[in-house]
Image 1: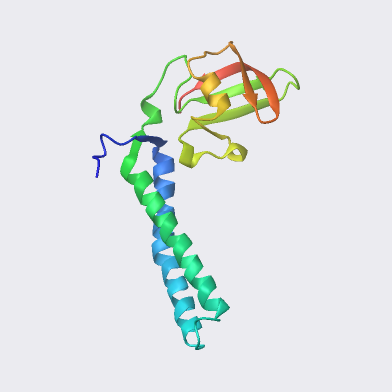
Image 2: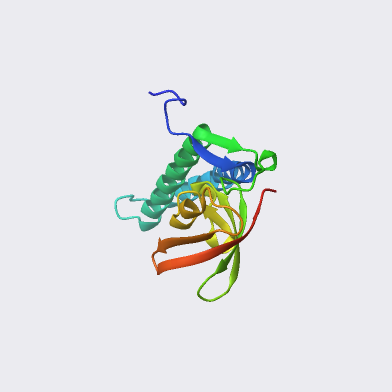
Length: 163
């Protein structure tokens, strides 16, 4: 098995790391016992070959254990970036960016975060998204364009902050 240093590190904020830790705790302490109880109850019904409840519970167990392995891997490879220690005029990981859509004039605010903590509706934009990649290195007052699934979008960068 390759060492963590040789594996691809995953940048994330401290808040993203904490959210994954919370999820893993929930999966282990709440979901695992609930699923185990469901499997035990389904087994009590007899013939497992045609027991839909048993098969559904086993499938839930498989999904839960898969998600646990995925989160454990993310946490193991996490590179926590202290956004409060960042500063500067150019956009990089952790920046909170205020943009104005050049077409509609709407203002949007995004924080550039790691892939596993991205949620556009909550204002968290993945570092690997087309818009974030287009923003990296730009400064307040610059224009930015990117190709999104809904077509080409152009923005004016109104503010860059690190908080």
